[in-house]
Length: 395
View 1: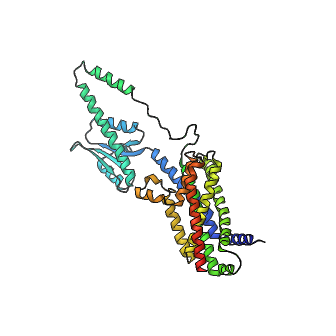
View 2: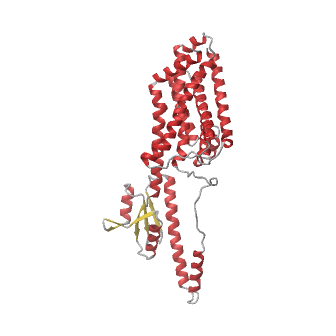
View 3: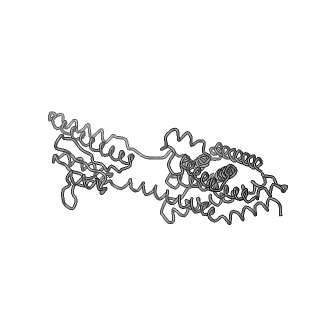
């Protein structure tokens, strides 16, 4: 048996005996992609549901009915002015919103002719602002339209038909608003939650090999395996090469697992659209190889720098989560502050995710993923070199 074969056999035995590490490698990313994807899809569905709004009009003005009609017609709001056939009052609105039964209420006040919005104080700020802006816009638009109608009605009799005709003509000539995506010609890929989530969790799963990989390195250092191997004619490069090959195979399994979830599991069991990967298969292979090597390099680096398993597990897991957040695995990068967006360009996880997004969504080619692929390979080479230097000095 050759030296490399013996090292590979040793690594397989270490990996197969690390049951908690295997759970982290395969079960954790699967659970996360299900939880995050289902949560995002549910958030989209919630946004499509009409928002209930309690309504009370203390003025009894006929214009209030127009506002209610426009709110209902918008498709975003459900106006509720009676509960159990009993008219809603301001006191009732305060009670039901303070208890969390409803989130929004509108009171058309008779005291100062103003409109009061009553809000649940526990609402998330972005959601609250979004709903308040929509309510304010629709109410103000209705009031403005009503004021214009009254102005037209007060015009001289021969002017009103002319103005009405001009308004109708203008409304008929308004341009039709259409929605499209900035994709290449003849593109068949449609962006959706699956297209965006699968690339992120492919890299997230790959980088989670840091825990078992770093753990095996520290175990071997503690048990004296490296010291015994150093007495044999086997260089540190060959020892680390064995780890690289074994964990490269693990990364390939994770890639296939995540792709299978996007291609078959989500469409079959949850009715989501299937992951579309385009036709640049060679570019996908190159991107996957470079991402796997970068993840392995990160694991080697953490294992070389750590002195205890707890240190490696804590630092490695925290760093993977931080890199995942910075790289857009859990939250789109464009929603982050500018400084965080710039910092994310230093993350090897983002380089890999951007490659997959270029291929899966933007239908890029090998040239489009080449810059990030080179960065990933350079990162692997740098991590491998540093790991060898550290091991050589310590042993």
